Image (cartoon, rainbow, N blue to C red; front, side, top):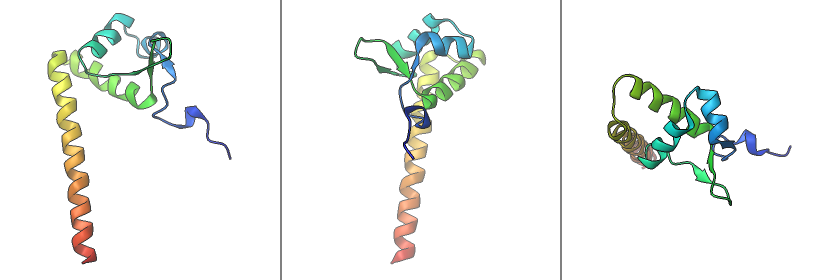
Amino acid sequence: MVRLPFDDEHAPLYSVGQVADMLNVEQAFLRRLDEHDVVRPARSSGGQRRYTRHEIGDLQNAIRLVGEGMTLAAVRRIFELQQEVAELKAELARERAARSEG
């Protein structure tokens, strides 16, 4: 069976207008999140932002955190720390797997 782009949560398929409508936010807010390096979508050949389903989930989290009073800088730092934790967990899992094999 052929895998279609919308099957891939990392395929950049959604325009800023579509995502703004989905999340009930202003397009300008999504552009600010991009400018502040909170969520950086891919760009089409024409330079338009294109969001993935994965990024839309990140946007939902960012919107929630901003709603709780976080600044965009704080949201960006939270996302960075979450990524570091995920990487460290993966490294730890690899180390544990290597020890159990040896």
